[in-house]
Length: 186
Image (tube, rainbow, N blue to C red):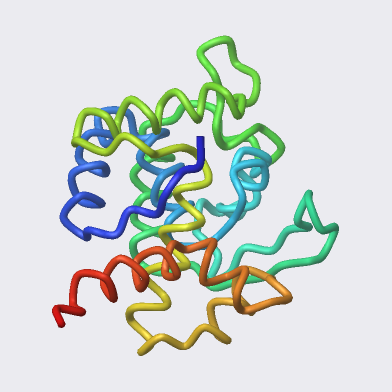
């Protein structure tokens, strides 16, 4: 099943509210919708990637993308910073090398568990086609909308080589086709 971006900002807020019951899950969501990282890269983060030895959140996160092998560095916005601070404040284990997202058993949170968490939260707010990739797609969709349809910007941020792929990826092609049919009343 193909997943979709979360287009409605109110639904994003509702999802975040549901996920806030567990700060780990809220942080995973917030990082995903604000950074365009793939879930594998989110789950591979360690405490030291988001917090220095003095307990301070850095201005940027730097990592090597697992899928592409490329280095990626990006600034952390206030929403991500706040979510990191809230999560780490309640977390006992803050060793720099420890996984940021841990399972109940203590290891890294798995992709399948992350999918179950997001799927359940989506269902609880009335969204059926939500999965881990919805986070990255949500980022792309809202960057596109907030930047007057600058597909080149979204394409660059998502590291896509073809703009048509990016439009389809964030659901814009389908949205435009449906809108065209509905608006054409000859």
